[in-house]
Length: 458
Image (tube, rainbow, N blue to C red; front, side, top):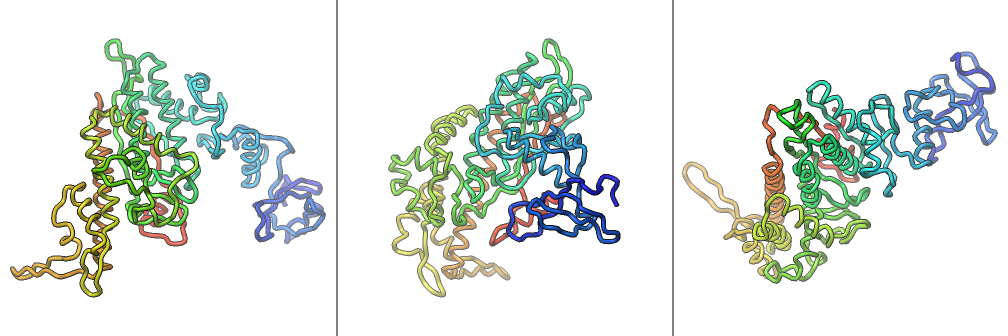
């Protein structure tokens, strides 16, 4: 028998009613039954015999704490109730020791910006209201105190708000550097180029309208010690390493989802350019129309295109180079419209001739139809060309689209790194921000879900 639980004690017990939205229900202990547990009277008057291990004392009504570790009674139920109570008061951040738990409010709260940032410099963790800014400050202060690299890991299920939390961390670190009068335009540029990664790496999913479909590790190199008039804490440069881009999203999207934002942004921003052949809009492209979803709440594709162009300017991409990128994006859309006829041997469908021509022109390829419908085998010095079946040609088309988009995404990351490297060297100490995929479980799971979930478990 637990010394904290006696007759009359208010306790939490696991909910056993199937379909209930509650994980735990509250009750009062009526008696202790030796060898069996407690008889608990629930709020509705029913009695339930509960094992000792399934019974946890409740904290006094109305008691909340900014740190779960400061609760009088600590249990799974107590932590969940503390998080729920704080969330109801619009306090979405709660510490659990040195970990910050963030709940997505799905609304913009007035707790961000320079005024809010001013509450955190030079304060140890726990001395100010829990916030993403507090975690960034802890990393910044620890870096200056120890001259050791620091990293912040942001993890959670899809739709939990990891992308936005990473933005807040990055904004704070850029501001913190400048607040020490050591900042430069590089700190602001790190923020300014983020729309490029969002456009090419984020998409609407069934759970999140702006879901990151890749993992990334951003290393912000910071000056360790004073050099001349430059004080410690200056941002020297930054590099981004991307992981596990969801290439399978290019040829297929599940119901209620969209392809990557950049496709819809280019349609809005370049739709009038006849050379790109985009006048039919999203419904006219196979790589965009399978889910029947062409817009997303809170996502303005026209504004996204304007921000993308502005970000390209920050990395030195002039109008000519931007147009090359938009041609490649448009070319992939036309590639997806290339269909095939035949049974045992495929050929480009007559109705897809224009799409094939557009794709070849925009992607800078020749002989594309032949490449998609045939394969070449070489054995003992002899070369044989075989016709693909239509379904094989479709797989070849989609594989090409996925490989091309992955290469384009890698090029965007490399371009950003070249612009932001600054004075950073490979051996430079850094503050790292790791944004990893959340655990995923869909009706149909692929090798990507296996890799994502394995990484989360590690």
